Every structure is written in structure tokens, then in C-alpha cells.
Amino acid sequence: MPTVTHLRWLLVAGLLGAGTVGARRDVLFTSAVTYCAPPENVLVQELDIRYYKENASVVFDVTASSLRDDLRVSLSLNLTVYGMQPVSLDLNLCDLASAVCPLPLYNFSGQGTLPIPDSFSSKIPTIGYTVPDLEAYAQLELLRVDTGEVAACVSATLSNGWSMRQPGATWSAVGVVLFSIVTSALWSMSKAKWRGTESGNWADKELWRVVDIVSFVQMIGISALLNLNYPSAYRAFAENFPWVLLLTGPIPSQSAIDHLRQRTGARLGDDALPTDEYVNRRLSPYNQNLALGSVQAVAQNVDLGNNYGYSFTSTNATGLGVLNSALEKRVFINPATVTEADALPGGVPVYVNGAGVATANAFLGVFFEWLVIGAIVLGVCIAYQLWKRTIGARTRLAGKGQISSESLVPRVSNMLHGMFLRLALVLILPVTVFTMYQWTLRDSWLATLLSVICILTTWAGLGWTWFKLSLNSRSLDDTRRLAALRPSFPMIALLTIPIFITSLFVAFASRSGTAQVAGILAIEILSLAQRFSSGGKLGAESAT
Image (cartoon, rainbow, N blue to C red):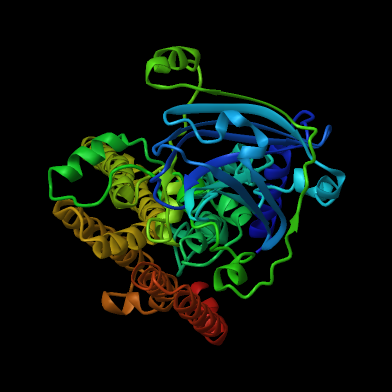
């Protein structure tokens, strides 16, 4: 397993190397904003909050609209960081600025700077400005002063700009996979004895190293498909490798897939949802206790004093044109309303949406990538048949002088069957997982039909190439066809059966992450035990 070990270090090196950038300012900012309750009294169009460490100040920029007359509110801000609630900030807007008490009936905007006392800023550890994929979110509530009812609720994810999702990690893995593919192909073509290239169960380990490497990277993505409360850092790291699960997306465009689905009975949404907004922020390993309501309040109230600077502007019906012209260059967020029922389910939806693919489009994205690979394989087969006919014609014309050239044909055939078998072993995991998950969606009848064709073709192709390779690997004096399958059957079963069962758990047990983990762990333990118990026998057969 030294190659897999080297791969781990290459991925880590690529990730760390990609993160080496120029000096950044230590800052915390809102990276995603959503409503945590349906907006009935106040519509928030923009919310941008930044905290700068160097001067311990908060810079805010808010644009909103009030839907009720004479709405007087107070502001309540609660910060949650890795399951802790270190800060609770309460402000009465009537004490802050008369321009927003009551809230203007139409649009109003506010910008300003609030200096934060040392009692708060000193509690933010230095690592909070550099740890990737910070697990922090703030909930902002506007409470009616007269009744205490919630007039508006906005939830914002906080970030420091650092993430485990880095192009360097992606390209490092791509480079290792491409290198393994090239070396496997060169090793096949450079063998002096062509018949020995694919003889025995699995021939030379160098030829099959590509399967080990690709499977290792695939399992990172598969682990992220489980319905578990992963830290956001691991989820971001796994998003570096959707390409190895055929989730690259651009072939064809997502809009073309949407159009295809809509014309064949689709009922699910078309757009990939931003995971920063549509993941339930309380569902993380750090916030589970908060979600269960078993954590004691540890928040402290912060007194800002009177040293804040701010500016508010508002407009009525006659002044809307002036305000709109002043804000033409600004980007409005228009947050979505995301309650617990609207949040993305854990597992496959979170991962594929993070990769920029809608949940209902996941299989079709995989299918079109599979179709491109199939077209390449078909082209290679056609080229081989043309070359084979050319060699046969030359042999008939030249007589016995071309026997050596004619003997090259079965050698090349064995080499191609070995390559196709390795390709099939790489493809069956993503194809089986997303095909089975498509069956659980009950969305487009065409997507379901294509999924059946895709999975049957892939598994049939794997079985056929294994069958042909096993027959070609038998000794020349052995005329028993089925007996030639026995030596390699345990190994092919050991590689494919766990993949099939793992796909069943990922697709059909998606509501229970515990069941998924327990099932997959049991399969891995049984596979390992079977490998150890039959390792000597398989090794002896491989040498024959």
C-alpha cells in the first residue's frame, strides 16, 4: 500500500500549498444569509457584517423594507461558534437612531461602524481567523418592542475566508490519477512477453495500481455521501473530488439536463442550492447539543456604550426612485427562507449540490459522463477491429512471413480486455450509487429508464471482459471453458460484491447515517476477513 500512502501525502501537500497565499487581514464576515422564519413584517434585501480584528470594530451594511406601519423593534444577536454561544447582543433601535424608530414603511438602509469592547474581542482566539471552514453562525432577530413577537429572523454563516476546498488538492489528485493511468498503460505495452501481460488472476500489481488509487479517492467522496453530521471542514475537503464520481457537470450543461427532465415528467427542482444557505446550521457535530436543547446558556451581554458611528437613510413612496438610483451598483442578496423543513437533507443532496449539481440532476450528470467514456471505449474497439483486419489481410498476402505479426493480435486483445476490466471496476461504484439513488427520487421516467440501461450495461461489460480475460489466461492445452473462471472468480467477487452492497446502503438507507455506517463497516470487515483467509490460495493461483 505504499502508493496509497504517497497519495495521502500528495493530497495534503497540494491542499497546504494551495492555501499559501499572500497576507490577509484578520476578518470575520457573513458568507451566507437566509431567513430563519418566513418574512412577514420586514424584508431583508442585503445584510453584510464584517468584524476586523485590527481595530476591533464591526462594519455593517443593511438594506431592508418594512411591511407594517409604526413598527418599533429591538435587535437581538446570538453568536454560535463550535457549539458554544459566547455572545448575546441586545440593542433597542429606538435608542440607536431615531431614523429607524419606527422602521420606515418602505425601504431603508443603514451603514456604519460599531466599536466592540475588549470584553468581547479578547474572547476570539487567534486561530478563529485562520481555521478553515469556520463553524460559526449568527442569528439576528428583530423583536417588536410592544409585544416581544419576532418581526424578522435572519441567520448568517460566518467565515474567515479560509477553506479546505482548494484547487491545489483537486489538481494534485488529478495528477496522481493521470500518472497511474499512464504508467499502467505503458507497463502493459512494454511487456516483452505479451501473453504474460494479463495472465493469472490479476497479473502484475503495477497494472492494477490505478484501480487502487482511483478507488481510494472515490471513497473520500462516497464517505461524504453518507447522512452524517460531518464538520464543514471535511465536507469542504470532500468537495475537491466530485470529478472522480463523474460529477463534473458540464457535459452537457445543467440547463440542458433540466430541459430533458422537465419534458419527461420531472417533479423536483432544477437548481443546485448553495449549501452554505440550505444546510441546517444546527446539524453539525458541534451543534447537536444545541439542537437538542440541552446546553445551558453561556452567553454574555455586551454593552456597546455610546461610541458607535452610524448612518441611516430611509425613503417613502415618493422617494423610491432616488434610493434605487443610489443603490444601482450594489448587489442585493434577497435571502431565501430556510427552515428545518426546507434545508437540504444530509448525504447525497448536500454533496451533489455542493458540487454545483441539483439533486435531481445527479444521475443524468453521471450518465452523460459515462456516455462519453463509453464512446471512447467504442472508438478503441472499432480501431482494434480495423487494425485486426489489416493484420489478417497482410498475413494472407505475405503467407508465413507475417506469423509473428499475426501472433500480436491475441496479445493486444488481452491487453485491451485488461484495460477495459480496470475501467469497469472504476466505473461501477459511481454508476451503481447514483443509479440506485435515482430510483429513490421517482422523478423523471426517462432518467429512471436510462439508469436501468446504464447499470445493466456497466455490470454486463464488467462480466464480459472478466469472462474473456479469464478464458484467454488459461493454458493452451486446457479446453475447459468454465473451469478457467474458477481461479479468478473469488477475486472478482471480492472486488465487486462489497461495491454493490455499499451502493445499496448509500442509496436506500439515506435516512439513517448510523445504518449506513454499520452496514458498510460490516461489509468491509467481512471483506478483509475473506481476503486474509483466502489470500494464500489466491496468491498461489495467480502465479499459475
